Image (cartoon, rainbow, N blue to C red; front, side):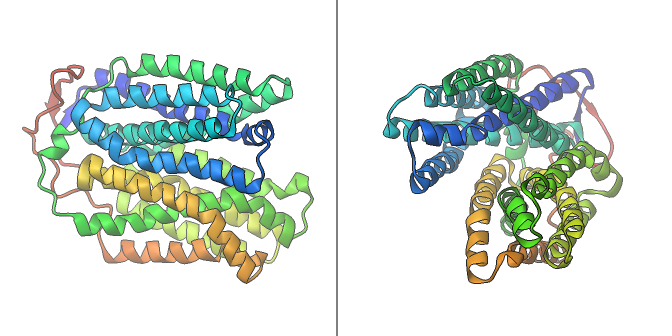
Amino acid sequence: MIQVASSIPSSLRTRLNGLFLLNGVLYASWAVQIPAVQHRFDLNTAELSGLLFALMGGTLVALPLARQCLVVRGARQTGVLSLLLMGVSLGLLGAVTSVPAAFVCALLYGVGFGGMDFTLNGVGGWLEERLGKPIMSGLHAGYSLGALIGAALGTAFIGAALSLGTHLWSASATVVLAGLLAFALFPARIETASEARGRPQGKLLLLLLIPGFFAAFGEGTVTDWSTVYLGGVFELPAAQAGLGFVAFSALMVLGRLSGDRLTQAFGAGRLALAASLASAAGFALVTWAGSAPGAVLGFVLTGAGLSVLAPLTFSAAWRMQGSAGVALLTAVFYGGYLAGPPLTGLTIGQAQLSAAFVLPLLLAALSVGAMLLWPLYRPSAGTPPDHAPLPDAESPTIPAVPTGDHP
């Protein structure tokens, strides 16, 4: 295969890491202000849910549009357009005064966020392939760190009694300016290598959606229900009920920071299987531990497993079908994240709170079974040969040097 010379990939990888981080900062800036948005527009629970669905709906609508834009206009223009749409619409959300205008802003923000997320994961898969070594877990760690930074800064803004508009415009302007600088030397096109392959892997890609859906479903469920679970099942006070989510979040960051090294050491397939098994053990421990410390340990195992599963799955989707695979997985991923909390609520309604994490446990078992039966994370048989062309002339010049076997 072709490997990119060391100097330019390090710059491009740094820019990509920065963009993942900025994406996390801006999303967390919105997330911490959801109660303020609800208060500003006097939304009841149903109306707030509709606003959140508008955002997620925009994200899903963005994926086919963003992929078409990426193929026709290139990665740089797709990313820049998505970034501008994100920043402007989120800033306007803090300035508009009517509920319909707020819904439009949320929808457009979702479109921008979905386009940005798709572009960054696509370029991440392409660059990982060019470098010949895993980098996707580290990129996702950048997003997790950005979310922590954005949440901390947003909380500080709220504590300082600054207005919703001041916070959202400040965060949006900072992220847009920094993001435009990062996009300045971005590759214009990333599809050349993937288009050079004949990839008869549609069945494997569909099966790959199982662990992808599980990773998102599990993360969304823990995010929304872990604190409620510990407080309700074990009657922990509010100050302690959040320990499960804190432990889960910490392991998500730590796992992603070490995920690329683990992938190199053990291989993507073994690590993905181990991650699904760890997540299954974690959800089982949460459900049947019988004590609060045991449940917290379960959230630790779940965070460790889910932290690497999503990056590994995005990398595999790129190897199988390029940007089309990433777009499909992104749609399923958001669907899982969106479906997890309400389906968990329905489970609790039919059973009891102690059964909150039975559904993700079943999905974990299904994910393990799919990995045992099919080679979902094996390097693609269609990996481009040594003479595969690099991106077009609009891209930065990236000298290629021959290397050995595919990792």
